Length: 290
Image (tube, rainbow, N blue to C red; front, side, top):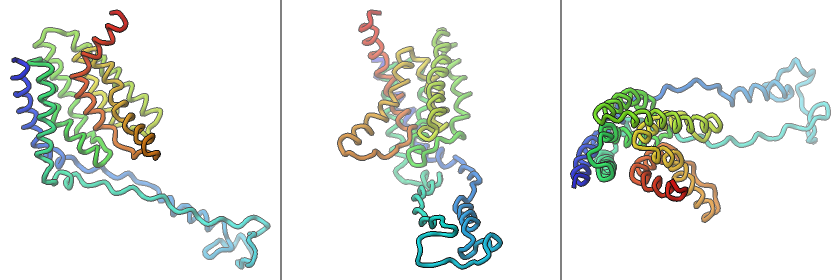
């Protein structure tokens, strides 16, 4: 019965806090655009410099600016330059955070997502001290998943302050429970899961952004506090949750799947790990005879 009351209480707290996700999204500052070199302008200048016979070329490199016609050969017997390739389609502009926050259905859907996460945590854990940091993280996780899905960005403005807050709450949970092994395991979870995603980012920065690495550290702390099974399952669950659907799309439809942001898969998979981590750990321990 305690788990039922814990599920109802967590659903009310997490769902109520998640109702204010639009305000949280609206408060995120827009990223400062990085200065970029106009590659098209540089290529045009290089073309002019290398083709002095064309209009706009450098007349000092050739006595006559005329180009003989009727021949596909260029000056000095060199082949004529092929026509330029069409430019790759530009990525659509990032929607403004204020526009994302202004969607009228965002608040109720965020509250529903938060309530579902709260029900899951309360029903599985009961009145456990881990709820001290799991429930407050729910609205932040909903906001991060929503932003990443629409912008492919995980704002540092949201993640960076979550680290000291999470550390304080984890330490408080350790003090109240009196079990400091959970706190030590939380630090180990941060090292393992955060380090695992850091290595992936170093290998393939185009596939995974550094915001995913920051988020992985937060998830590693929380899953590490819960147990060893949560660390192991949480290490690979997001990758399977993201990769298997794309593999099925490739096999069934025989086309390349659309690239999706990784943050939502990490958040959803980590929430499910809270429920499936211990049973999977017990099953695996039984298989290897532990």
